[in-house]
Length: 148
Image 1 (spheres, helix red, strand yellow):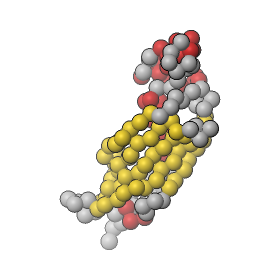
Image 2: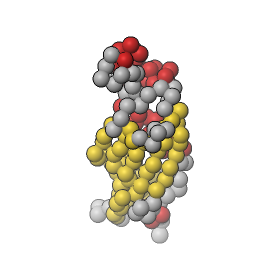
Image 3: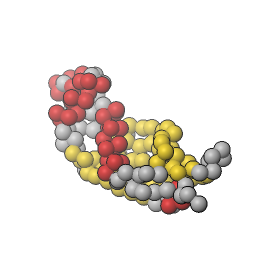
């Protein structure tokens, strides 16, 4: 996210990272450990599912999103995540997809209880190589304000 303190963030500002190459081996290894539904780990089961092929776990997709956020750089002003709103998996993620992250600041306000920080909401989207959205949600984070 870079070195963005609360004051540095502007509503409407957008950030981008990617692409991230999804490999079959990584996708399946993640699913075997964390989300072993047949359509995530077995090609034949994937072909016979409503997805018509092997698909990534939603949790894997979120992990890729997080890896892309870290490509934006460490942010010493980040205090932590306050949660997600409106989380939607919009389409399947498949082996060899190239995923790109976009984040747009849609809201910000100072904390009512702690004047040294503020709350920022980002609309987060992952799209594949065909510019099709595969993930969308609102990320709510807590950022430090610059020392006065």
